[in-house]
Amino acid sequence: MTDPIHTELVKISEANGVMEIVWNRPDKKNALSNAMYRAATAALARASEDKSIRVVLIASEGDSFTSGNDLADFAAAATGGEAPAAHAFIETLIQFPKPIVAAVSGLAVGVGTTMLLHCDLVFAAIDAKLTTPFVNLALVPEAASSLLLPARIGHARAFAMFAMGDAVTGAQAAQLGLANAALPKEEVLAAAREAAAKLAQRPIGAVMAAKKLMRDGERLLAQSRTEGAIFAERMRSAEAMEAFTAFREKRAPDFSKL
Ligand code: COA
Image 1 (cartoon, rainbow, N blue to C red):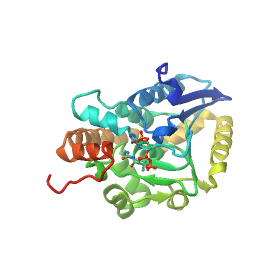
Image 2 (image 1 turned 90 degrees about the vertical axis):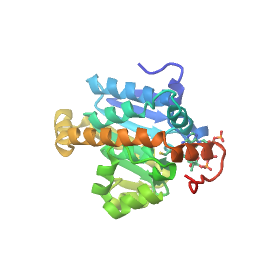
Image 3 (image 1 turned 135 degrees about the vertical axis):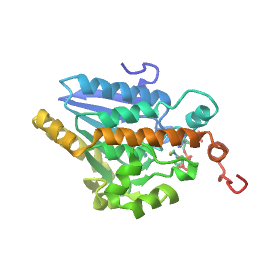
Image 4 (image 1 turned 60 degrees about the vertical axis):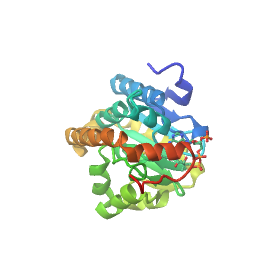
C-alpha cells in the first residue's frame, strides 16, 4: 500500500500490464522525500508480486526528473532523525525482477541518475541533465553506482561525474549507453510508454530470465551495502553538515576550514 497522505507526491497507476510510478513534487524539482521513497518502494514490491503487472515505467511531472534525495531529510537523518528511506527503495530496485522503463526530462540528480542504472530501457530528453554530485555534498556514490557507472561509461568519465559533479546531457547519455534514445522532451514520455506497452506484450518469463542473466544481483546488493555504510558515515561528517546547511541557506559550501 502507498502512504495515503503522500500518494499525490508519487502518482501510481496501472493499465494494460504497465505500472507507472510518477514523481510529482514539481515545486521542489521532484526531490525525493522519505514518504515518496516509501510510496515507490511499496509500489515496486506490489508490482513484483502482482502477475497482472509486467512492466514498470518511471516518469515525472514538471521540469525535472528528480533533484535527488530531499536534502532536508538527509540533514535530519544526519542529526539523529529518521533514517533515509532511500536504502529500501534502492535495494528493492536492485532486486526488482521485471523490466523497468524510464522517461527522463530535465534534471536527474544523484539517485535520479543512479536509479537509471537499474532501469532496462531509458528514454531521455536531448537536453536532460544527468549528474551524480555526491562529492559536492561530501558524500559517496550509492545504489551500486560506483560499480555500474564506470562499467557503463569508463572510469574517467564516471569519476568526473562523481568527484567533479560533471553533467551528462540526454544526448550524451544516449551516445554513452546510459540511455536508449535522446528525444525532444515533448516526445520522451510517449516513446517510453510505447516501449513499455511493447514490452508488456513480450513473453514475460523470458524477459525476466534475460534481465536476471544480465545482472549480478547479489554483487550489486553487496556493493550497494558497502557504499551505504560509507555513505551513512559521511552523512554524519562535518563536511556533509556544512554542505546541507549551505544548501538550506542558499549559499556555496565552505569546506576550507574542515
Ligand atoms: N532537496 C530538497 N529541496 C530541493 C532539492 C533537494 N534535493 N532540490 C531542489 N529543492 C528545492 C529548493 O530548495 C527550492 O525550494 P524553495 O522554492 O522552497 O526554495 C526548490 O526545490 C527549487 O529549487 P531551486 O534550487 O530554486 O531550483 P534551481 O533550478 O535553481 O536548481 C537544482 C535546481 C536541482 C540544481 C538545485 O536545487 C540543487 O542543486 N538541488 C540539490 C541537488 C542535490 O544535491 N541532490 C542530492 C544529490 S545526492
